[in-house]
Image (tube, rainbow, N blue to C red; front, side, top):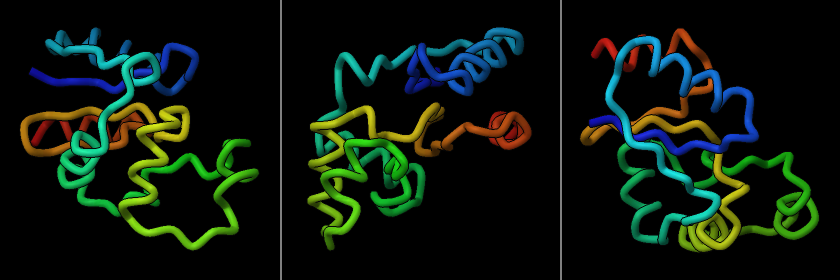
Length: 115
């Protein structure tokens, strides 16, 4: 079953959820803002996404700009920051087995679901 890391306040996340519903896909909603992923869960997610932690960061968020933008951070430090500040996690994310995608573009989502 698919999982979607969903932020109900995010238009792209809402659109992705609607797309999955329209396609009659079974999925589980992960409310990552209310139940943030642990650092270990984030490491696994990053492996599925095949990206470094910095690529998962919403770098235009105020909290990032004010607290972390100018710092040189390790992968482990970024993962801890994301776990402590889940608003910084890019969304929506769709997980299918051992693969995942940041589903910000409908065409990429469709391609991901076809594979």
